[in-house]
Length: 314
Image (cartoon, one colour):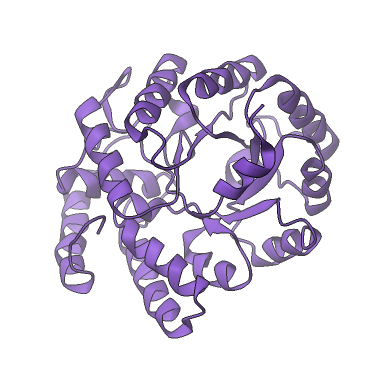
């Protein structure tokens, strides 16, 4: 396994959960993927997270997931750390993808609790313990109760954080009290990293000590989130407030058009397609936006050019 402490140091800053450009339900859109990766990296991000919720990971065939990991790692070529989501209902599939990620040069894997039937806390501890013992990369926990139907309780996180191989957590619960409890539990263990997955809470969490954020909007305007991270790191509260308002503007305009939780990644994909970066094809059972929905995204993008002028990674 890679050195845990060295890898943990990489788990910081803005790490976009990349959408997965598709040419068909069984194929990557290779040109779109190449453009998207370069667009994101141009924004100065600190890492890249593939096959998360925004990347539609659980809805993609295993062969496509493996192909994506290979392509991304090859193109990134160590410019930033790559983190790979391995969440699956089948334990052996998670382990197999972790090994592919290691072979391709990824830096760590990310796992939520297996979904469908929710695990109890002790079952979850046993699951992660077995997983850590069988994967060749450090593991980042992923708390997303909306999708898994369970919360990784703070004391469970504490126990899992003691396992060799577990280096941090991405929290997408949208619960700041939960975040603060986790932060306090690991106040004397700076090697355990805490990332905010709810970008509307990014500013607040950074000022309270989060190590970074996994922000879907950074697919579109990565520099905005990097600037926010830098402003928080330098305690420029005025700038943090200004940039937070822009994050909220993007979130309100793009993520609500689909009127469901899938509207987040569908909205991002729609915007990226309008910008000419990649296809907006969504993994089944989801559908791309209709033309009236696309028009709403197009109107936002036209307005956005005046709010946050285009540039590298903007």
